[in-house]
Amino acid sequence: MSKVKKMTAKGDSAKDEAAVSAPKIKFTIYVFPETMKTIECLYKGDNCVSKTEFIEKAVRFYCGYLLQNKPELIDYLAPQIGTITDGIVKDSEQRLSRAIFKLAVEVGVQTHLLAALNGLDDTALFKLRSGVTDEVRRINGIINFESAVREQRS
Image (cartoon, rainbow, N blue to C red; front, top):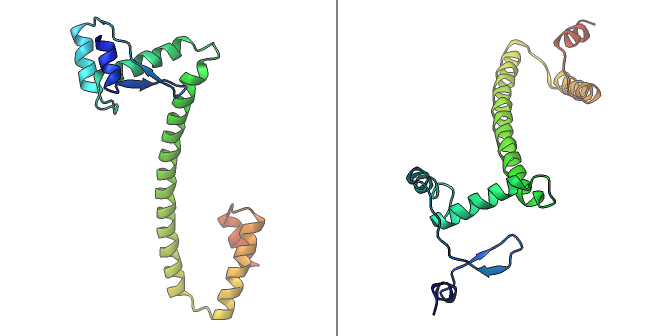
């Protein structure tokens, strides 16, 4: 029995993009020692089980790059765009979460400071909250300090 048939009999098969199982084809490849060192350093970091899987991913990536102006481009670009978009969204989410946390702390400090300095009764506090809620809805959340000062003075 040939080596290819033995490998296939052992269940050593790869899935292509169409999700159809196909036997792998064995062939010899010659690479420079520096290239092999790079592959050995990177293949596990790319979640590849073997150097063969890493090389196959690299070849598919490069083929996609060469086919940029062809209909096969979707096989190359779709995963790339998804990966890039996920990274951008996660980074933005973290930055926004940190900014919102900092704002919440500052609002909390200001709220406690104002509560300590002003003796508002429950009715005045309810009217203030209701008025501010209506104002924020009306101005779509864009609060201007000068406008608030003018409104409080009038």
